[in-house]
Length: 126
Image (cartoon, rainbow, N blue to C red; front, side, top):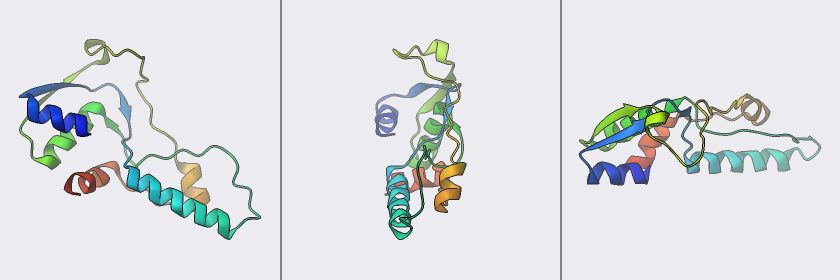
């Protein structure tokens, strides 16, 4: 996010990948979830919480969506143009869809996970 903000200040327009989808994760939201999980584990030591759990904020966003939200919330005036991954080569291959299934962590630990755009707003208004 900081890199995108910096580029928006330095350049009149950015090209951003629109065909890679995931969910931004706000570190304070993850920290709060971990604190809640640790509390529940200590409260119920007889329960087996083994397994793999996934966490990210709620919602889905492409890198383009994320950049547009950063621009809109921050009030930047940079033009943002969508491009495909083919037009923006990266050193490592990236999956087109990398949204995590959070149902297990939400159900097991009773978590209410914030929507990514709300957390981005909190981060930018910080």
